[in-house]
Amino acid sequence: MTQQQTYDAIVVGSGATGGWVAKELTEAGLEVVVLEAGRTLDSRKDFTEHKRPFDMPFHGRRLGTQATQERQPIQKQCYQCDEYTNHLFIDDTEHPYTTPADRPFIWIRGRHVGGKSIMWARQSYRLSDYDFKAASRDGFGEDWPVSYEEMAPYYDRVEGFVGISGQAEGVPQLPDGNFLPPMNLTCGEWMLRDAIKKKFGRTMTIGRTAVLTQDHKGRPKCHYCGPCSRGCATGSYYSSPASSLPAAAQTGRLTLIDNAVVSHVEVDDDGKCKSVYYVDRISRHHREVFGKIVILCASTLESTRIMLNSRTEKYPNGLANSSEALGHYLMDHVTGGGASGTLPVLKGVPDTRGNRPNGIYVIRYRNIDSKHSDFIRGYGYQGSAQEVKWGHAMNIPGFGSDFKEAVKETRPWRISLGGFGECLPRWENFCELDKQRVDAWGIPVLHISAAYGDNERKMVADMAESAAEMLDATGAEDIETRNEMSAPGLAIHEVGTARMGNDPKTSVLNKWQQAHDISNLFVMDGAGYPSSACQNPTITFMALASRACDYLVEEHRADRI
Image 1 (cartoon, rainbow, N blue to C red):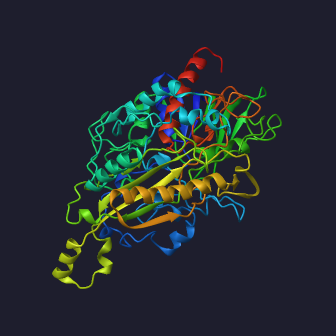
Image 2: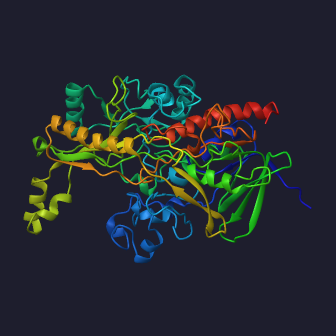
């Protein structure tokens, strides 16, 4: 009889953090198995970044066939899910979840090797102590159990491998990183930058993005084909299959098992993790993988789902849940506030940015030097100023060469800003197992109940008003404001539900992302966030995981886990 292999570490999930953790641990000498619920992608077939509408069966129509639309009622609400990319998003009928009718949550997911690191927006911003220690500033919630000083070396490490292009600005609430050369701003964006600095003292910068502007770590620089959400065959943006997973495989200590739909973690008589149980996605056969350490990187809600489903006599409320905080304090960035307009002064000025795969970022300015009267915390803006190529043509009469010339001569410049705001951590925003429903593999699904509060509502209103005043200062005309708060989940920045903290009575994980209750269980994705900040979270996920991996390796070598 063949002896069952026991790995040093089992990593659940192969996305941004799963791939990174695999790289860190294998390079440190550990034997690692990565379990991924979806298939391995083939860039030649699955990536469509170079396809044009005439290459597609439905000419790029929003989502493709009616049958596809019926199977993706949730996923199609994502701005990046269309005929080019719908195969990168889950089939909602196979992966159900439930919500209260009056508290919807839009859960956007991708199950394949690389996860959402294939489709992510690549914006990469560090957190500062305005975020890590926000509770000490305004009294709401809990401080993170880490500081920026502790995190800075790990941001350096991740950025050094991933490659982040951007511009240093010297603004304390958004620390600078180790940047590759920045992408160019357009004329309209320079106008906005100058105007809001002069009138309001606010800082606009080019987006800090995980897209290469020069060759880096064996990957070529971006060639500006444009639609990054469709995949990147050259690996010019960060995804785990293009960088961290190959680095892990190169060590010879990585085993990757795809189509492994994890249901729960098994524990031994002492209550420590001993294995991970999964269902083969294709055959539906049940499998078990053994390991000395279990690291959940399945994504915020999936990792929590696995822990909630790992109920035993010792852990009746789910794994590592003595605090009963597991599942609570769910957060997602609030959006829906912003403004757009035209820049007539630029009529006839060429837009030289090409298919720049990046936008601009207005750095948070609320509740930094002074307290806002209506809300705590803050928001940043993402947006752009660019020449419209043909979207305005529907309002121009005619056809043929005269029509073409009219389209060229009347191209307007559009400028827009949309806010991403911090969501406060609240106990009443939570997920739990649904006792009635299971997914296509017989695993209990989540019931998610979340809603934004008055603080977020007032923040979105301020986003709209402030965006309009900044566009007005830039010389924009026909300004239209947007003030309609998004549903939770649509920002696709969900965090929380297994938060870190120093007190085991009120948190699930310690400052090393290690479960308070179980020394050989770690959660290294967004589930550990104590508060959401307002910056895109992925680069912080990876920096936290890098720090946790250093601790894990040291503890493993000392046989203390």
